[in-house]
View 1 (cartoon, rainbow, N blue to C red):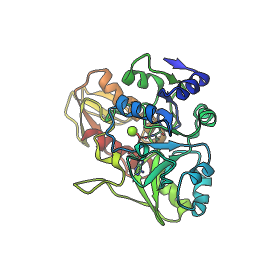
View 2: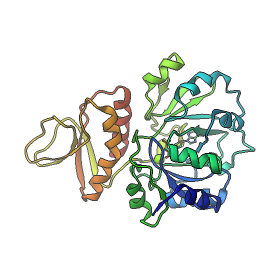
View 3: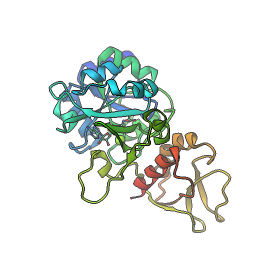
Length: 307
Ligand code: TXA
Ligand code: MG
């Protein structure tokens, strides 16, 4: 059900959960200290309680007020990329942030979104927690109809159109030095232009306790079994690219042209969701593309979707 800004604010003030658009993906929002509504987010999404939430604020000063660290060294980074698709994991001011938001961790994640509608809601209601607006494990939602597909046609959604990035924010932790905890819309190369080096990213694997709890779960996955490959059987379903030649009788779900990585990222979850809409049970994903910049994020999402 589509709602306007006033209705979104009213519902949030009455301990309800609403979906809001961001420039990355749609989120499921609750006021960050409203534990009743936050409980609803976890149960709606069927999200494990050990997977903490990102707090969305409207200014860097607000982030400073919710952390125990002096953020002066991060001023240039914030000036360059906030508002935008960057999430910072920082030591939390734990008396101000409910444990359920942080999954009891001593840190918390913060982001300043840039979508006009959601910025207005945050200014009116205050900081909001917002996980992606999808059932846990499914592809994220990049349009209002995706949110309704997961949570039903009566679920309140503030329709802000198609998300411009289409993949989630990049999560960067800071404790003296930087580390990428989740690849995202902001590339390591772009971050390095301000940080002075490319922050490392380690894939979560094996039994080591993940630094970014969400990384341990299956994610972004349609029902179809996905095979990442550079060779394709005849008559198969392929998730691939414009201008490539695939075997005869294949059905192509196109991610667009390889010369436009931003458009590929923006289309990614719509294509994965389309496989479900068409009840496809097996598809071959063309992984013959570079692993740099945004393509690195796109490949990581496809890998996780295929696990
Ligand atoms: O683009 C985005 O970031 C979207 C939009 C809606 O803002 N939000 C989003 O939220 O992707 P979610 O909940 O789907 O993913 C948040 C990720 C999870 O993997 C979680 O484990 C991680 O952030 N996270 C949150 N707090 C953390 C913390 N204190 N330390 C490490 N990872 C944290
Ligand atoms: Mg998510």
